[in-house]
Length: 122
Image (tube, rainbow, N blue to C red; front, side, top):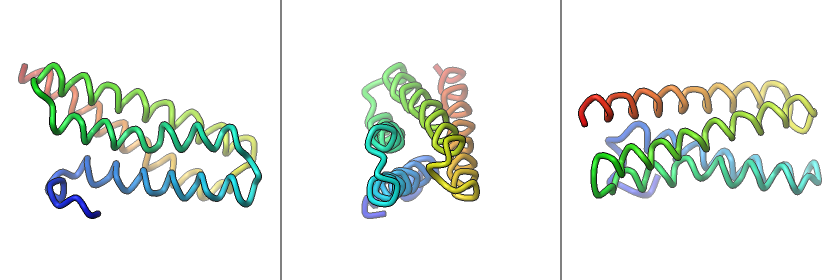
């Protein structure tokens, strides 16, 4: 990860890593599966999670922070949906799908916990 400012932020590190995996999945879907519609969906929402976490880390206020994390959470839930669909329609191998789904579900748990904590501190 190139951005040194987020090294101490596990959520930022994990969402960045997941964004990179989403890009690799997109490339695989386009080149190997010749799938162009669902692949764009997974690219968009899979990378958006980390982008919104990065924005949250520069929030102007606690409500702004909570809002950005909430958007990241929505994107993570959408990503989970597309991953399940790609798995069930056999565009990706079950083992890869389960690995990505496990990581995505971990992000959902982390985001949910962060939002709850931020709301309690508001």
